[in-house]
Structures are given as structure tokens and as C-alpha cells.
Image: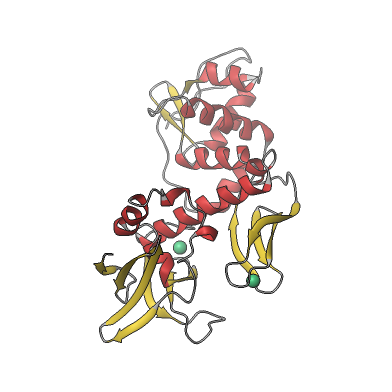
Length: 305
Ligand SMILES: [Zn+2]
Ligand SMILES: [Zn+2]
């Protein structure tokens, strides 16, 4: 790897390495590299360029330096070099933001690292179990929906930037969308935290289970993530359920989890233990769809109205 002699402050050429070095394996190196305002600005400038171009493209040394606004080429090159490999790679004459850079820049933009706002507001919604008014509370990146009698009925993360200018019901809709995506991704075998291998087992023993409730347990073999959902939550995206709603004039994707009447912990009955079969009923407009799920919470049989 060639390291050119230091040029004058006005030299606009690139004096970095000719190729990307070996992959770094210590994550603390990456956090060290980001601990500087100029470097974060470089990451943002390259990420901004890639956001506007779906292709794998970057900026030349001189364009990047102009975008970041550093006059001293030597000093700029030092900072750029600190980001190399993990956050920035060189392709021909261009510097390109890596996926790690895109994720960091996206999280900064989304307000993940800065607190914008807190709120606590009563929602125009009733607890599905008891009918009490629900309360939405947002703090430190998490939206909690609580019932005065049942505690937390829903929780998910929403970054601060997404909350700054939105009303609580819109924030709830965002959290709801994220919950659906998270569950769908985990159901398809990819952890929502680490993309590791997730398996689903049912029936599961959740921490505070009441006797008649049937839960599915999703667990990641790589990071240890575990969460339990009612059996009925595993059928929301099933084509038969989507079509059942669609045929009755409802796009189920527009319905909040909190507005799906069938999505309760009580909707699920173990009808066979070997092999495991759990029955979930979906009802709408006096019609009923019956679904039979196996021990991995996959639908194995559908009986229509
Ligand atoms: Zn309640
Ligand atoms: Zn994981």
C-alpha cells in the first residue's frame, strides 16, 4: 500500500491507500472513528450522495472535501483515512459510503442519538381487554401504550426525529407499522436486532401467561432476542386473512394492531398436542375464517366462511 509524501495544503489529490485494507473486526475501532465532528460530516456527505443515487457511487476527493468544507487537504485526508474500510471505501477515483456509514448517517438523521421530545397523551382508543382509555407515552425513543388496569398493551421504538413534528396518533401508527415489520421479519427467520436466525415455537410460556392463552415464542439463536406474541398475531399477514378482509372492503394493512378485534391473547386454542395444532378464528361482518397453525406457528389449514 503506497503512502505518498504529504503535499501542500492546496493539493487536491488523494494520498490515501491504493486499496482497502483487511476487514476490521473490533467494533470499538468503528466507534472511535466516529468520535469526531469532521468525520461524521464526511459520513453524512457520502451518505447524502448515495441516498440520491441508487447505484454504488461516491464522490471524488476534491468534491468530498468541498462538500465537507475543510480547507486543509492534509488534515482532511487524515480524517478520511480514519474512516476507511468500515465507513468509506475507495472505488476508482471515488469515495463511497459503506452500509455501515449509511446506517449511522440514517440513525443520526432519524434522531436516534438525540432526544427531541417527550409526551404523554390520552388516546382516543379503548383497551381491547377492559375498555379503559389508553394512554400513549413517548420517551427515549420508545412509544408505550398503556392501560390503567392492564399496564403496557403495546410498545415499540420510534426514533426521535420521526416524533418531533407528528401528533401522538401518527406516532402510534408509525410504531404499529414497525411492530408489523418486526414481527414479519422475525417470522421469516431474521432477527430484528441482529438479522440472526430466528425460530418460532408454539405454544410458549410467556412471562405472565394466563391459563387459557396461547402464545408463540420467537427467539434468535445469535443474539438471544426473545419475544412472545399471541397465536393470532401470527396470522395477520397470512394471504387468506388479508383476502378475507379485502373481500369485505377492508385493507388489513391500514388497520392498527390495536383495532384488529381478533388479535387477542384469548384467540387461540390448542386442539392437538402431537402434532401441535392451534386454532385461531378471524371474524368480520358475521363471517368467520378458521385457521389451523402448527408448532412453528405456520398456518397449515384454512377453512373459509
Ligand atoms: Zn385494560
Ligand atoms: Zn438476534
